[in-house]
Length: 390
Ligand SMILES: Cc1cc2nc3c(=O)[nH]c(=O)nc-3n(C[C@H](O)[C@H](O)[C@H](O)COP(=O)(O)OP(=O)(O)OC[C@H]3O[C@@H](n4cnc5c(N)ncnc54)[C@H](O)[C@@H]3O)c2cc1C
Image (cartoon, rainbow, N blue to C red; front, top):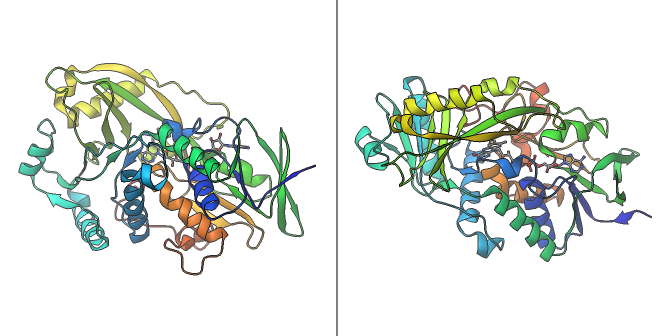
């Protein structure tokens, strides 16, 4: 006998858990099914940088809303998210100077605290940073969170509100009849609901295929390395995104600095999300270390302390797909956050809950993320060539 719910959510990352929280808060009977444990997938490995810099007004508003949730997490969600407001500094070269200025003007209109900063101001914000001939913007309120704490707090809050969380429950099939979703089959039995949300990130295409839906989402392996800061640099630093060297880095507990790439080539490393190496390669440690030293010269004296690999779920325009597919079926896809979804998680939960419940004037309209944009050649475009930041 199948268990009956109003909504089934597949996937216990930030998107599934934030949406479960939003729906349970509205009295919806929700079951969340996770094949492993909450946050064990890419969400738990996220660098979890929380900045508000986006090129599109919608994504900037979503980041702004989400920052407020991270800042007031205990009050709004309950539990902890480990938010550290160390500031966010973005550095771009001449080619992106105009785009940066246009974005800052748009973000300020929304109410985001951000501004262009001079070389002298950069020196004050982070004396060890090499930023000659670069343009910069600074967000004093941004920073990073603890992704595992955040997602488990969301799951616990959803559970307190009545959601049922089934861990180690793998969805193996999606049942459809007459064009409507009926429920899902799992390795722990069947679950019925008229609404099913596919929040499976890098597994998004694989799970969509269970209902014969094709989703342009690739699972791409990405790496992160960590370095212990040398004597004199113990104090920490803001989060930095440096377009010139195509890296981002942020402080990590224990006097470490965590480094990742801002490089479109990461989309080329397509892997099977069930079989890929979670170890960092020596070549990546070397390359990311060299780029780090170019931007932050004192790190020439740092000590490498390894790293790890995880997955981005990448779409052709580096923005997610949030849509009912097929239309009118009750089956929704919410995946493909292309390496920048963590910070948007609180807003996405609200957006998806509003979409499912047919809210007439949602705070965040999901239309920008419709799947049909690809066939219509209307991708989400930003000010920069590489959309992970835009
Ligand atoms: C190394 C790295 C650094 C990042 N840095 C940042 C950053 O600094 N800032 C930022 O905003 N974003 C960042 N991101 C991106 C961000 O972490 C992701 O966009 C976000 O976590 C995606 O969440 P999700 O819920 O869509 O997917 P996931 O976290 O992948 O969750 C999907 C879940 O679905 C489950 N699942 C899959 N198939 C099934 C099935 N058949 N049945 C049941 N469950 C299933 C998986 O086990 C998984 O737990 C980073 C990502 C990575 C990997």
